[in-house]
Image (cartoon, helix red, strand yellow):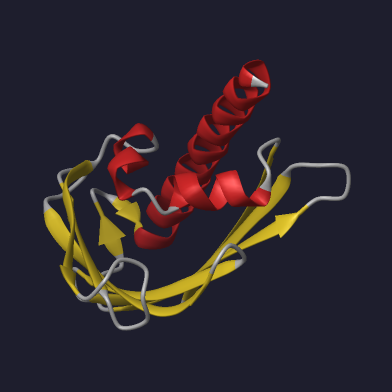
Length: 151
């Protein structure tokens, strides 16, 4: 089993952070590996709903997310299935004293695929998660700045 953990903070409040996270149409801003992203079953972000994400690189595949927990705006979890592997991932949003939000995620990956595009699957996942969540929080920071300018 491979475990990946990552934490990053944003200046955005927890509600804005949640709003941006749950807008799947923004996800291409956080990673350039996505093709189609769509809800295939159920209502968005409801337990049991399914989110299908086409990955176009480093290899072409589809990741099937099944939402297992959703407690807005604090927590979401899902199970992914792709390329012979299963991953459980949790994301927590914690309001920081004085403003902003701490975003923490962790994932446990298991399965038969050990190498992706010539690199260990754990290394690929770790790099992807860090990059995705860092870019996500940058987007949240920009949105928070825009909100401040409007007030």
